[in-house]
Length: 297
Image 1 (cartoon, rainbow, N blue to C red):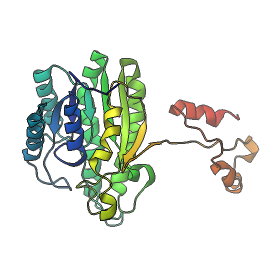
Image 2: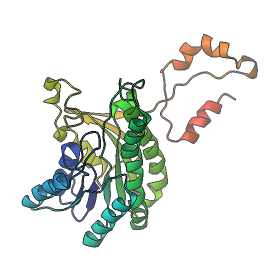
Image 3: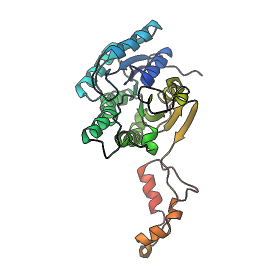
Image 4: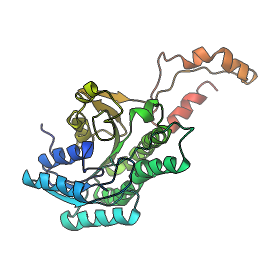
């Protein structure tokens, strides 16, 4: 059965270009009404203009869809609240939120200022928190919601020169995991996508030959699935270049020792066993991880 979004309303942040634009256009093509949010600033977050968001709205409307523009910064609580109220006033509901807005301020940690660190965390992590908080109660009351966070291979696996970005992006995975648990009984499902795409954010970070294979259209199918009625809950999907993979925070079987062996020397001597990934686990919650840790007690 085709995945459709008829009568659904979505907010897509950072939708003036790149991945967000693709998400917004693809959602609208499948019947969704879309709030196209974009500050319209530079890649580092400076500046701002409504033109980018308005251009995407015009594109959607020319194709017969319904959309409205918002140039609110995701870090502006009042601006986000106004965006949500405007969407609710026009369409009566919000069913989907895709937290996609982001900035880059790449430097090695030795050269990175604390202002650059904070700015990236504010947009990626706190921006997602602010937008999610603005729709959370509405979704719980409606007993329906689909929220998508955006992580990155940098957050999951690290990348030179992106300590601020990696910290923010892995923080979003932790946020998603808890919200997925808290929203489950209200049919509010929260997932995360790790895109590999050719966008303004990556245009000078990857080889041109690779970028040609990584258009936003290679990521959008996973994003749309993760905000569909059929969506799973608490999942991290990597997507891009024709590949789709699931990412997990795993736990090895490790070792369990008695009180007399609880020493640094034991850890050093048996680190190979501790790190052995044979039969590794994927705990569903932090409590489940604690149960594994205590299993040998």
